[in-house]
Image 1 (cartoon, one colour):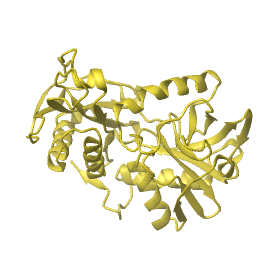
Image 2 (image 1 turned 180 degrees about the vertical axis):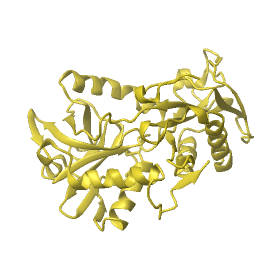
Image 3 (image 1 turned 60 degrees about the horizontal axis):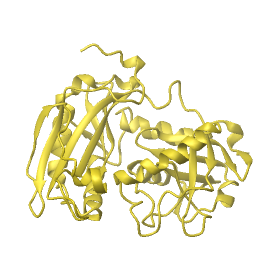
Image 4 (image 1 turned 180 degrees about the horizontal axis):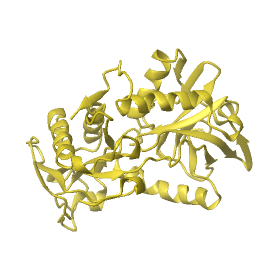
Length: 336
């Protein structure tokens, strides 16, 4: 294998193998097997193609400086996948099968994991209705896949504040919908809103709630945070917001390591514009500082357009744990 890890971006690089398992409707998942990374064969009537019955997860494997391979809170991804399966009428993948599949795929593709400071091995589990069906109903068969790709750091050259646009034209999710799970159908609609923002020079959109068009929900596909003095606020999980693994980790770290007051509640756009620091979180970027938000035609800057001190401290503390460079008092890191 010849791969320049220093040139990696956050994009797909095919690895050696993937994991695949199948389950029939009404049956139970059995352990699958590793197979070469390859294209899939699906019926044109596959439920996932016609009705979008599918969801995905995302997590990373890191290579520590001492050579260990580390996963970050994989059991939480497994639990979120099971919840998503139930919401989309698919048989939940048991935790032991999920964790075993992730472990096996990472081990098999370990030579694709970049050195500590050059990135990570991104892991993509998928569950979808692979069986053919014409009526709107659960598929007769389901597939569970796990594949990987080496990716570079989301921030080339360090943390960089992003510029965001509050969208007045689109909502990400509705109350009692599927916004709280990683359904595949949640993501394609966001491409249009994101594309509009990029054409105007912004990195992403800020979505407001569908009920009142007033409260912040998410930043693109990332969770939103606002710092007011010693208080860290993030929108509460009301069913339309994804329960992010990084989100949960930031909340615990902020409270227990930094002594901040943590509150999960509604955050109006007007309140957020008065925050001391803003950032968003997700698996890909970990923490993205927000330097500017455009709302109703006016740009609002935060931390002087620079990275806020507490945002930086949270990012450095969290990534140090993920990479095995700091003590993990939370028990988040798992050796492969």
